[in-house]
Amino acid sequence: MSSQPHAPAQEDAANTHHAHSHGHEAGHGSFRGYMIGFGLSIILTAIPFALVMSGVFDSKLLTAVLVMAFAVAQIIVHMIFFLHMNPRSEGGWTMMALIFTLVLVAITLAGSLWVMHHLNTNMMPMSPDMMKNMP
Image (tube, rainbow, N blue to C red; front, side, top):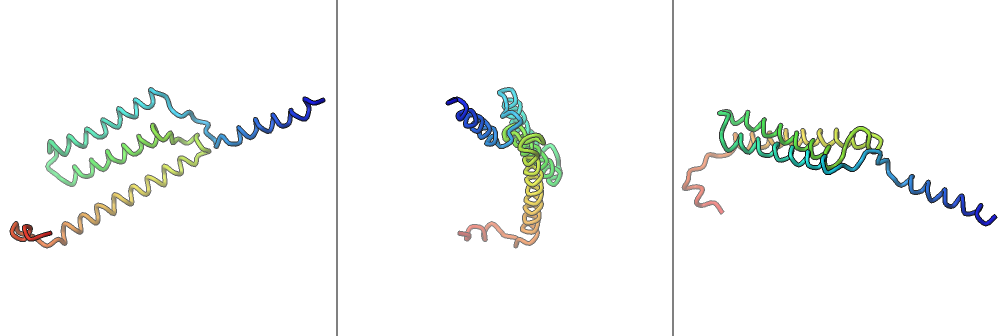
């Protein structure tokens, strides 16, 4: 009889453990997955660096757009391979976080380009003599 009162407590402990799993149905990654992500990160860093340093394209605008495209691709690689965001994990909430992040990245990139463009077009031309007197 003494074993019967303890059985529900053991079941509750097991259910509590499963209730605190927070929906981690997807795995947390493997060594192979991390190495693929690391390799892609290196490639997605080296290509824009080579584009800028070698001056492959004459158009600075095209180079800037390509560098930003590689930056967005690298963000996605990091979110998939290192943060393990996919439609199955966390009941789809990580996918919502991915979409939210992509919207924020688009707003940030567009805003940064807009600010830099307007700073470039509205900046007063300076001679080298004027630049010497700057703090």
